[in-house]
Image (cartoon, rainbow, N blue to C red):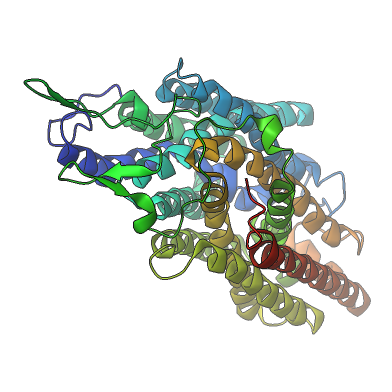
Length: 501
């Protein structure tokens, strides 16, 4: 933490001040530092304007024009790939967390600037480098402290689910807002200029958050009363980026309390030292959780990153309508993540949340499939079905980090969580590509809605598009069903047999 705080909020001064810091300042820097998710998660409203600007107003849905979408989905994979490395850097404790975030935001903004130059000068390869590589690495470094330390801080007051839920809410709120202000920026300036403005917005808002950001071990509680000193420290050495605080926390009277009594999100694992990543990868349990995570996230990401594109291609919506649809989807997504974070350990267990979130996606995908398959006439029923899918995606993403904490202990939380983020990355990269491909299969359908209406005036082309989209939605529903079965098997068999670490 770089910015000095009054003693009433300084986490080093007293237990009461530390709790206030957790409840008020941690959510603030989480919100400010998650600004990059605006374009990172909300780019779906950007895709069609950028693609038409680059390929021309008569561009059609092809694998070539899809390169714009592929470049924007690549950062999800790149970010997931560097997170395990980033967690190891933080684990050594030599680099303060705010420096990691600062490097991340600079790289991310540089990526946006390069993306703007790529669109301005029609250099597609520069878009891949700027958006795909630079913003991918930057977003990984930005998101890592939010994902890890949100849980670590709130675990000190026995509410790790709240930390995960708040992280999800802030990371969903910015894309929802982006759905509205990005089209306005494009209308008032230009497509390339919207990149530059977004880079400036992200940089200006993130910097104050960096000044307040820190990990629990960077600011240990120390109070000296003559010879008495109270410190909040981890059980073991600082091997995991400072997020470990053992299996106990401290209440306002200075007494140790078991965090397991505060929430159902805890672990049976009792270790003195964290596992290496190689050791983690030797457990069968890890691969079952990894597979379940991928299957449960894959269809949701296909919808989330294509929400505006699907509405445009299947229902020929206006840009304003697409912005509204994107906002509804992403705001609901953010709200559900907050609700699940609050509810886990209070009203339901992390296992119930994981199974329920997988199951609800099946209903949403089948509903969307039926709407499209039967004629793609009812736009808002289709939107409701996709929002249901988004709710399931949001809920499951909260359970990923909490499931890592529950099954692998706080000592291994950072390493296991970042390894599970590889499933995020694969799902977030492959899903959107397959979503675009189902719009490619009918052939020569224009991206421009006015031209698309004329082309889809042919009953054969329209019916073919709807049939293919319906079949793909049913396939996504099957994927979600497999995810539910894997999660159900893990909860009912693997974990019950105590085959965890």
